[in-house]
Length: 174
Image (cartoon, rainbow, N blue to C red; front, side, top):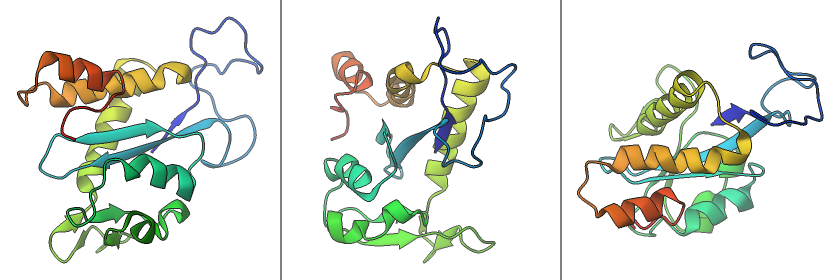
């Protein structure tokens, strides 16, 4: 997913401030430098979430982020058709299912889908953009940790493990 870059609370900006959300100042689409990529992974039927702010969405960045949490032989990787996800199954040594946006592209073999990730994207985006009215990009990893903490609050792990995971150590459900 992508969120618009924000310098909320900054006293000095390199560009004029946007008023009331405002539009982009140049290039079209999500390729602009005004968007911050966030990689989200979910284990279905479990509260485990991996989410990271990426500097760029490249194959190497995605593979290095997922390598520590994907277990070969136990995981089936379900992705969209972004070019960074091509050949991830070879790099991570797991089977992969790709989903193309179409009418019948939501479910494969009656069990594989990406709807749990899409639901998490919607919850995260609405929490950050509507409830919090946006957050500064430099603090975004901390807010991702806070969102993980809210997702894990009822699973019975110790409070210390949940706090360490919210701070980025990922010790819950590994």
